[in-house]
Image (cartoon, rainbow, N blue to C red; front, side):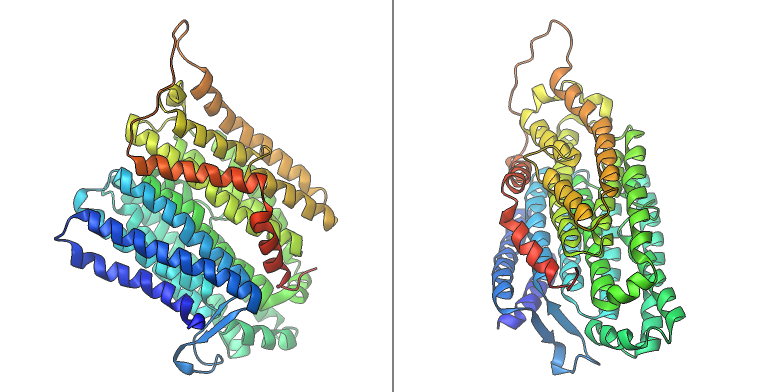
Length: 495
């Protein structure tokens, strides 16, 4: 029964997506309650999975009882269990928010379809986290691409159609690039199962070095497009600016991170250090990460639309994660995994806070935030906590992310990377701090503005408050998750 829990989690989401159309003639609150109950069930199951795997080891599940050489296999190790809980936990908070804002600009007749797409997406996300098969990962990638494109374009506006078209075209290029790499690996090894591919490739890669480097290059580029790693990021800002705020939060906090998990599996489970070091992959990834960290922040500074600014900020923050991975060390990987969670909380808080502002004030420009904290103190307080976390101020989870990344760079004798981290943090100050100062300190002269609690639906405020608490909790007590993350990173056998 325990070995089947990952499958049960996925089937719960798929069943929910199938049940929602049957409830179309009933009040929509029943659909929302059903979705929330299902999410709580999977959250509970995911908690149990983590503690079971930490004690007893990874869960293996072969579909149909077929041998893993020819069949589909799921392998839920500690990293997969942690990421799975992060995904469903954060989605539950975003789901609570979406119940309050009525999916921001989506027509009422589309509400049911929106949640159908959301649960199908969650089904595929867990599949890509759990799978131990390269081709199976591609299948789940395609499901995620289709559902994400639909969620972006669901608002039925010209700009959303343009953004979703750009998203689907670029992501299909990424999918084909990844699939071509899988085909080359299959040509050499005869397998798509990650464990069997890894075992085979370690003994033959010198004989087929051209195939291997081409496959590795195509797969990294394909994942880079889907994860919006600089310079393959061009679809992300428009998608964020056009989609409902709850969708933007899912895109930035969860979707792109799932592809980073695929990258981690590809590098450290399939190819491993000997091959990666031979082809100098670490150096290439460090250059890509450093460039993304700086350029993403520079582009963010130039934006007037706050959601586009947050989109470019995500590109910069993805650079932090890639840099941690590029160190090819246990501490570096642990810092990357911690930042996946930390950035997920912070960016979800930022997008949902902005979503409340859009809901209440109908504004999207940074300059319009002047004095807004007097009218919306809770919303702007959470925005401030998340923004300070992005900068890396102590007592926030973002500070722990950057501190751990700096320690990893020193531990691996790459201390010069700290300069890039500090410079990127200073650039974050340039575009976050003016918004904070403007909203809390700027107002018309000689005018008294008493703070008043904003009148918005309680699910919206509840969700952002929970995210703010999460950012501070993991900033003050990072060992609540860091010890387990470190344990998961050490299982990859890195230095």
